[in-house]
Amino acid sequence: MALTFLQIELISKYGYRGQTYTVTTADGYKLGVHRITRKQGPDPDRLPVLLVHGLLGSSADWLVIGPEDALAYQLAKAGYDVWLINTRGNRYSRQHVQLSPSDAAFWNFTWHEKGIYDLPAVIDYMLNDTKHPAGQIYYIGYSEGTTAYFVMTSSRPAYNRKIRLAHALAPSVLLDSVRSPVLNSLVDNAQVIMPLAFTTNLVELLRWSEQQSGMLQTMCPPETKRNPCVVLFDNLFGPNPESLDTNAIQSLVGHCPSGAAVKEVYHYHQVIQNGIFRPYQESAVDRIVVPYNLSASDVPVHIYYGMNDWIIHPKNVRKFTAALPNIRELRAVGGKKFTHLDFIAAKRIRTVLYTKIMANLQTDLVELLRQLEKS
Image 1: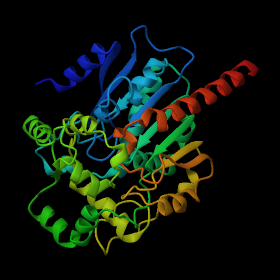
Image 2 (image 1 turned 90 degrees about the vertical axis):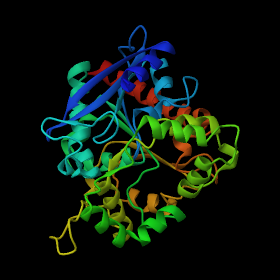
Image 3 (image 1 turned 135 degrees about the vertical axis):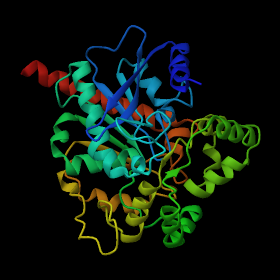
Image 4 (image 1 turned 120 degrees about the vertical axis):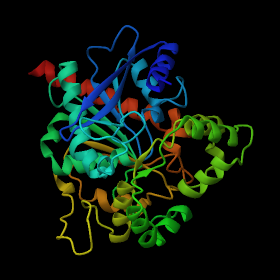
């Protein structure tokens, strides 16, 4: 079943032009990238936008709530050239120049490699395809999409010059104050779970399948307000019944979980345990691992977080952002009950947050055009 094609077909159904690209990274992974524009093409005065999904997610995360609300559609409608990456290991990016997903070596990566290889490869591809000069890409990341972003901009600072403005939604950088009982239980038992996973060669986590997708959608009908998916998400991400959109949840579980490497989850575990944003440490006796230099991440950035996000505690957001040199905005959105999942699936998310992002881009675009007129 050509799922990529069906997703592009759905985009076309809503009156947009959808395209699919394959981008090969420096270490050989082949990434599926989706592109959305208006039927008549993007406005030449508007910059390309890169949207980056979270852990176990895919490009579908930016589409599932439909054309009236989803950020990807809203950006395309406004004339932006919208690119949606699928990072290595998810359902659209399960290819490599030499390795197969059945090889354990295929899954020997964390979100570090996503920041070091995946994002730069797609950014360079976008610049080459669109012919926009470096420094004229907008970046919007959610959850792990922000983790990889801060890896890239702190470790490969040349890419800071290729991004004009960034937005970080639910920034997943420091995680030592997790409130999720589900995640805390996994953390408490990680010393047993992870060695068992590695010794049994369990290297892939929650691969997407049509059967799994259908089962989850059947188990979680939108008319049942406390269906199993809602209960799980409440305990994982935080509850927000006033913002709950069960139709969005059912659509989301049709695409998610979309697959990940066990090792990238364990990398998050290390950050939770150590309270330090740093590269993966292979073992306790491994060499000293130097933390990422967040002060090198100097792209102007708007940072949005949720007060009731059970994965990303507000105090962790405030702590890591103290190291960033160029914050345009640091804001809690959606009131006291706003959660981690709300950033992509909440009722009224367009009015709560996406219109603000659009306004930020418009303000910056006006400034860019003013600069170009003077030059």
